[in-house]
Image (cartoon, rainbow, N blue to C red; front, top):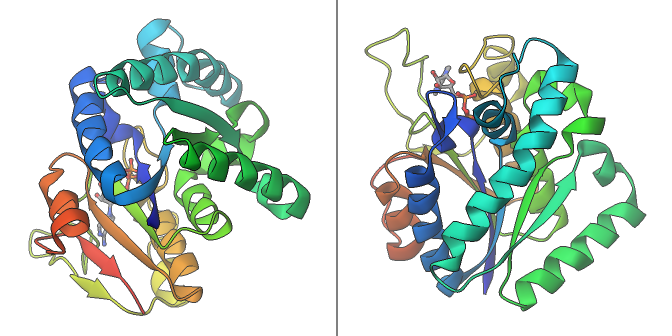
Amino acid sequence: MKKIVIKVGSHVLSDDGKISLARVDSLCDLLYLLMQKYEVILVSSGAIACGQAQINLERDSVLNKQILAAIGQAHLMQVYTSSLSRYGKFCAQLLLNASDFDSRKRTNYAKNVVLGLLKLGVLPIINENDATATAEIVYGDNDRLSAAAALHFGADMLVMLSDIDGYYDADPRTNKNAKIRKIVSALDDDEISTHTNKSGSKHGTGGIATKLIAAKMLLDENKSAFLASGFDLSVVKDFLLNDKQNGGTLFRA
Ligand code: ADP
């Protein structure tokens, strides 16, 4: 079975700053189908948005974001657990941060857990350990975390589900004529740096730059990445289950 990492952005899971149960259900419907064909690892943002739905605390400092994430992570897992139970499936939580992948020992511990969960048919759900990952919170880095997870846990592909349905030749928010790029076979640092420092969305903080960095990490290892809409899941479904690319951007060498 091929192994895939699915990364879902906070925007996709939340509606008006609150976790959307309907969106989580649609995602879990898809994950259940994917689990019949692939070994699936999920990287899910959304803890801060979940926390904000639970408690009235502004996300105006790193500490407040960490507190919101700590509150929201428990709720986020509850929501996934309940949604997956409709299919008799279980999930498991792994809180990691970039520095865990700097240590071969820690990476191997995490890898053994992930592989063990996959063997049992349990869905591993990874998120940043926000309490100790201040830089990640500031930069909103689940994109890079998901790429590291894909590479270190031996996945064949990284799939990023975002509020944007692909990588465009210009920012689609400001350029109405921007066209989606269907296939990207190379990314260089100059191209990526033109997108750096431009803010992304209100809840996601990565923007397109961290998605390109993540895609490049896969390309550099001769693996592929796919960026598609997390709102209209039919595109990723067609791509992964029916081998049809009806949208999105495929990064492959
Ligand atoms: P997520 O919350 O899913 O992680 P973000 O909202 O952080 O995603 O990043 C995606 C955003 O990046 C899009 O909403 C889009 O407006 C912006 N963006 C800027 N330039 C581009 C581009 N060339 N192609 C696609 N999206 C772009």
